Image 1 (cartoon, rainbow over the protein chains, first blue to last red):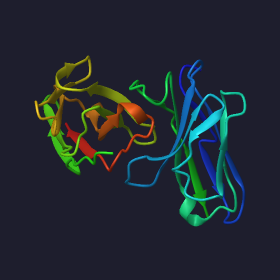
Image 2 (cartoon, rainbow over the protein chains, first blue to last red; image 1 turned 135 degrees about the horizontal axis):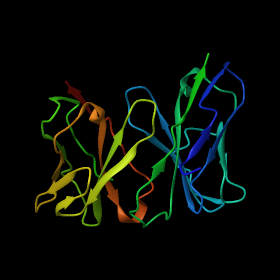
Image 3 (tube, rainbow over the protein chains, first blue to last red; image 1 turned 90 degrees about the vertical axis):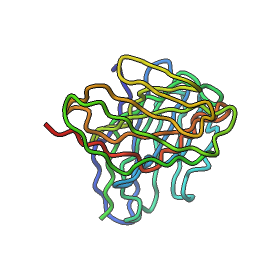
Image 4 (cartoon, chains in turn red, brown; image 1 turned 45 degrees about the horizontal axis):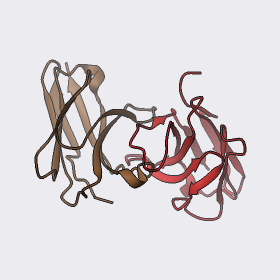
Length: 116
Length: 111
């Protein structure tokens, strides 16, 4: 597709369960980002990949959150032992460059996670 | 990273020009100013970016005074479809991936 694709668009789970959210970036974009957005707030940075490696994961809130990008394209955000406070929209973005590049970020529509 | 301050909300009518001003008093020499737009249930979308003076594209204009401590996003002749949240970001060249969004300005365009 032409844009960043995220699946699922909606996920409802129970407290304590494990969740995976997938991001398919724009073809050829080497940089990939995960953000989290709570209701009424702006997106909050979680992690940034340049190629296959996580160049900056300082935004991950705790060790229950983990993300991978094994082949430098698709990325998966993994959340273990989900808590109600994890409920938010998880946004993925990609760009041609990365750190040091002021090019724009292209965002997907997000995955809305609800933890009951 | 510089902190930005912008109005929480603004109202306008179709056909009017809308100006949203953002303050960034602690902007650094190598920071760019970037604006994003976000519609409900969508991710943010890049609108415009500038360093100083004026930048114009097909969507908006961005005015940046000489001291760069503020910037103004100008939307000419808004329509109902411009109702959205607008974010002002200060974007360091050395870590442009770590965008700090803030809460943005909610623009409501009325008929």
